[in-house]
Length: 417
Ligand SMILES: [Zn+2]
Image 1 (tube, rainbow, N blue to C red):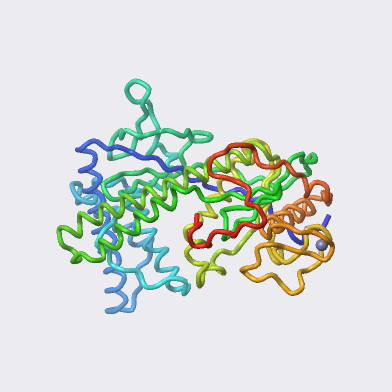
Image 2 (spheres, rainbow, N blue to C red):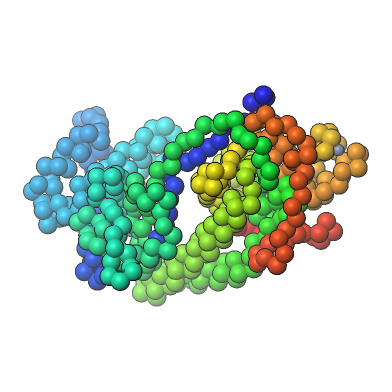
């Protein structure tokens, strides 16, 4: 068994689920109040670190600040004392991590905050957060020191046990991001997969599958992106800090949220379907940070590729399929039939792979077959016939279509996912 290409069958430890919440007016007031306290805490703790270093060359660490916080909370019950203890500690922890990143030269110096928009319960296993039943068939999110907040619980949590919870304000809306723990499962000898698929996350389309399908971004993405850009332009013309600016900012945030929500919903639909129809899903492991430059930048940032991979991983596991990531080096340049390298190499604009062996295929589909081939090889199933299973696209499905070989691909920027 050649394990050269395999990384591991990767399951994220914490999978996030985002829900809209609808705090009552007094709950909202309390949330705003607590966010304000956290802002104060952050700025205070940052200043303390700066000051003690400047004056006495003493560095104040997380442990020391936590100790002080406990004392402070006891004396200020109406202020920082109203925030749940671990939420306040998490704020200090975040500052500590920000300093570590700075010293590790991977981030800039932590800044004072004008605005804190989220608070995090780092360990909900102790009962600080829970999803409970509300009136009728509704659900409530129980948050320590806040109360039972109505939640749009449209997607049940797998396992149902909340590990962490982040409450966030986006414009005039509130969201809760709940994470659940998913165990890391090692690669085991598997029975032969019947419907394996390789996925190449592309620039032209969202994804190309080894079954020959390509998935395009739904048209409505572009429409809402355009409306977001328009709102942003309008914002930039307003005087910063003015009343009109403030109003327009809310509009921008709302449209941002819409774009994000659309993408997440689409990613959920895609991955659910993949996990249903395929018992092995192979992805490329791509160090996205290496690719963020030039015109790649937008499509990658917007891509939500990390999100797609993460969803795939846990959904594959849920339906007892396999999820494998392989290194992507050369998947584009190699012929998926004979293994030859393209000569001359394919440029960014070459959409079709043509091999002297006679193999001609969409470049991304060819890459996805290579991804699948390597994944199968990594688990000891080096079987060309599995790589070339053609199931074809299911008929009449929204948001996806097969791209014919002759059609010009959409510009990468436009199809950004
Ligand atoms: Zn060939």
